[in-house]
Image (cartoon, rainbow, N blue to C red):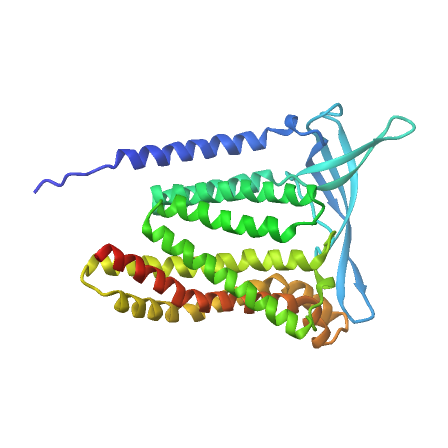
Length: 371
């Protein structure tokens, strides 16, 4: 029996287009130095010195190494000039970097009194890594999810643009309307994401309703608890690099984090119930509600634990640094993990509340469709 090989030409063309686009993009970021205003140099030679042992009062041991880095300037008025730069790096790389031959780096160049050039390295030129990762993600999305993957990537791009606009609004208003700006942003995030991924359907409306109500209820409950407890134990000063009032920023950060968790769970529940309705058109709204509860109960625990681990992983390195420098566990937790724990609990409340809400929305909408 002759076997026919069926080729999906549309998928193959799309994949080849993305692959060629990625290769062009990688070539461009490797040769785009002329588009930068900052001087860029490529490391052509490195000479490392002997590591020197360092030990502090808490018996923390590190090693510092001096290196002489020769860089060739690849853009600007000093193009093709070779400059020797001194650099120090530690084994821990806490506040420094080790440079190797082939690295491209940003430079700050000065001309001395006798015309000699000197420079300091400002950091890596990392656009190659960023472009490669974006290209890899797009390839995987299209290869595994095809058109749905393209829609998911489109939603991420649009949300990134909306987030950038929100940051600019916050800067223009000097942090005076943080909750209004990012509260609106959260709702726009949900609408844009669900419209692109699910389309203007009843399933999208059920998911959006459950996401909005679950997120709002979790934030309202958290604010009531804050009011009753007078926010004792909430050390907002532990937030790093905050240049405006910390409390509204913490609430905005919590709102966005809770939104993602609640949307994830609501999408799972509503999608499952719509599939059940497709497989069994005669299923009742009550049965759908109970099925939604069971689905939510099965994914609730893993989802809450994932959120908790994400928040804790974000503070792991700083917590380890606090403990290794003689601070107690209680102080380390308060200064590094306390706010993350609160965010996990608030998101957990939203996850729990989203289960009956999503199940009820799906049941009501499907019940109407049955009628």
